[in-house]
Structures are given as structure tokens and as C-alpha cells.
Image (cartoon, rainbow, N blue to C red; front, side, top):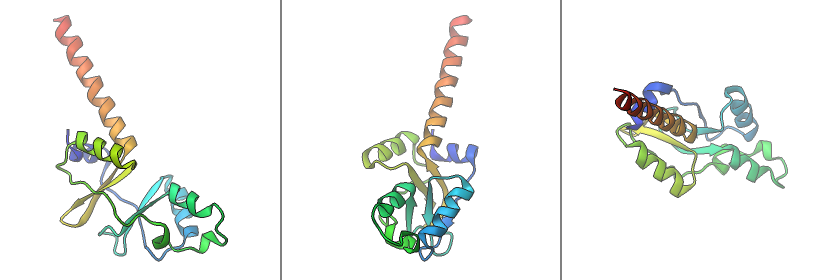
Length: 141
């Protein structure tokens, strides 16, 4: 299975935030969209970084006026990305090795989607259920 198969099921909409936005604005966006991470992008198309709830927690722990800090100051700027043609198995390996939960999907330098560990688990469960059904049908016939 490829990443494109996951995107086909969940859609390719990606929530982005400007690197100049404040952490307060970031918190409001995360709450509004009920998500755990946002791609940081100056133009809504290219990836400048990624920022997650974990980044906010690390900042908030002892930082006065943390809400006024710019997203660019806490984002991860070395973002691991994938393409729609990458295999889900390779994506799982990437997420595990680098301990990341969200991977932007990029085509020709532009955002084409975002895949979370939850999306990967959901697709893997679907694959296993399909295989189980096929094996049960094979045994029954």
C-alpha cells in the first residue's frame, strides 16, 4: 500500500500556519481544528517546518509570556517528508526511527497532504481486516 492510498481515503487538506504567528494563535488553531500538529508555511504551499503540541509543552514549561513567542522559534525546521508514491511500510519505519507522528506529503516541493500515525494505523487495520476476510473466504470455499 502507498501513501496515496491513505490520502485517497482521508483527503489531502493540510492545515498550515505562518511562521510569524504566535503560540497563542497556534493553540487556537489546534483547538479549532482538533488536531495535534500543523505544517508551518509562509505561503500555504511550501513546508518551512512543523509544530506540534509537544513543541508547545516544551516551550510552556517555564517560559514567561510563552503565548507571544513566534511559531518559527519552536517549530521543527528539518522536516521529514514523503511522496504519494512512497510505501506505507517505509513511512512506518521513518516515523518509528525518528519518533515522529506527522509527515507532510510533498509533490514537486508543494504540500499534497499530511499523514499521521493514526492514519497509518487505521490503514494497516483495514489491510489486516481485508486479509482476514480473504483467508476466511478461502478456507470456507
